[in-house]
Length: 466
Image 1 (cartoon, helix red, strand yellow):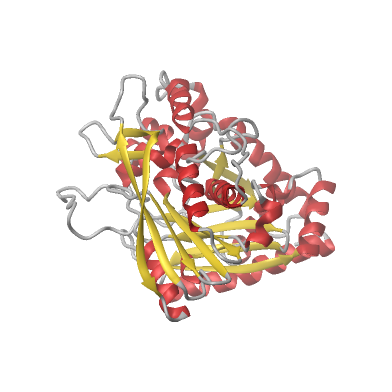
Image 2 (image 1 turned 90 degrees about the vertical axis):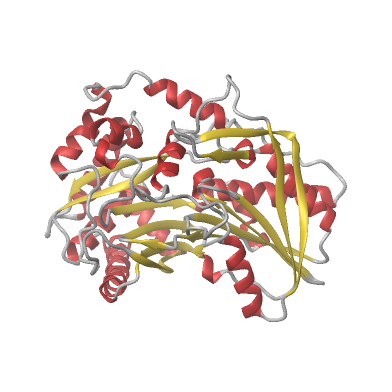
């Protein structure tokens, strides 16, 4: 499995079908919480600018989404696939949510499982690979944060194989959740096609997760001791958003269309060697990757102190391991990565910084913004932000079947003013999915950074130096 741009979805031509979700929402109820803190923030950040008007019949604004696909070999059992899609919708309540703008923020409605139905729509035959890809890419881009749909599903059907594809708006999902959805649909399809009921772990409720999170921060104020780490970072950084340290050729206050690409960094053996080196230094693989990134950015002209926002999972390994939703807190990390520093000290500094980040992140970042930097709350990020992520896809539900299913996940970010770095590990090694603003300078920065990061990680893995 790879994380790829949505434009790189490899799909053979076939007969296209899609499904629309119809649900009789129960309506807001006294025992239901507000949307989660992340959802409230994201919904607000995607609002029209002051003075703008939302036009329900007009142009859909491009919004960020995650997508996934997998292959079914042999003739498709269409009834089994439809049953699997419906099973997934009924299993995960966040996929049954509807969001509406209201004066007090987004209002949430959740349909009961039995009230969810699917409408199958026949889109005809796609005669060429280019036509098939254009159709699917356009289809996956129909999610809309403010108006929905928030979950779209389709399939490209052929005599001897079919490609199942689906997308979720970022409002309702994170990257790991897309792998959960993929696993659930593929597993349920195999069960229904064999004439039996799927056997999947019971997921924890996302709505309850949001309720617990809100209860935990209900009494938080600007002077709350749990904000000390975030307060200190904001003071040292000069604001809540660490700037991307390299010039991307973007004028202040502007952005533009985004470019999206995925590059290999280390092969399977190199990744194993890097992990062994990190362990020998008493650090985890994420800390080693973070150190390599900080050093690489400094080599490309960045500062001696690496600062970035890092997404941290809040789902844990218990009841939410098989849940779908947005189980992420965004936290700032900082550590020294000066020129000439030895490998052991930099990796140790990244390890210790990660520990401080986790311990200091008991208050969600979006709450810290509202309390400590309200001018930035529910607003687009003000400048190119230093953002990086590391995930080990081998830990995802169903990872052992990813090759059998020919599974991949995809990112779609239509526009940006910065550069986002998603590093991930698969059975084949370590890769980088990078989304950046489409300027000549940003393209040069991305190419140089990939080359430097590849060399840095290879040196760490092979020789124990930067």
